[in-house]
Length: 101
Image 1 (cartoon, rainbow, N blue to C red):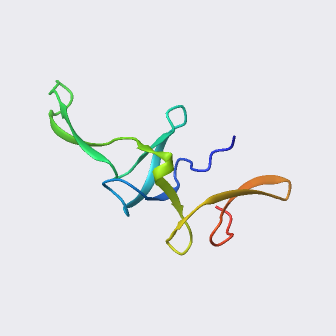
Image 2 (cartoon, rainbow, N blue to C red):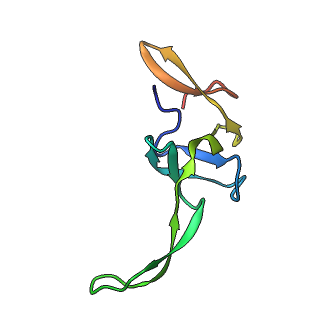
Image 3 (cartoon, rainbow, N blue to C red):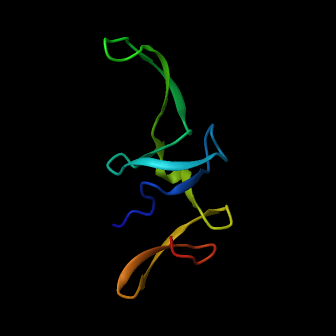
């Protein structure tokens, strides 16, 4: 099955503690059904100091369920993703506007 959300997509969070926040997908984990989004679902992780890296408390984006994300359309609103064939190629489009993503 084709992926509705991909790396680089601009998305909005639909549910959870970060509801309403937007960000860009940096990584998709299809086997877990999750994605990592910049600036969303942040947690503090403790890093031990090494000879090459400074230690301390570092913020890290944790994975969020794909079902809690929606792509942002040209109007800046959440939209569902559909598929259609254009010029012999399968393309994704925003259901709200009909624009190809």
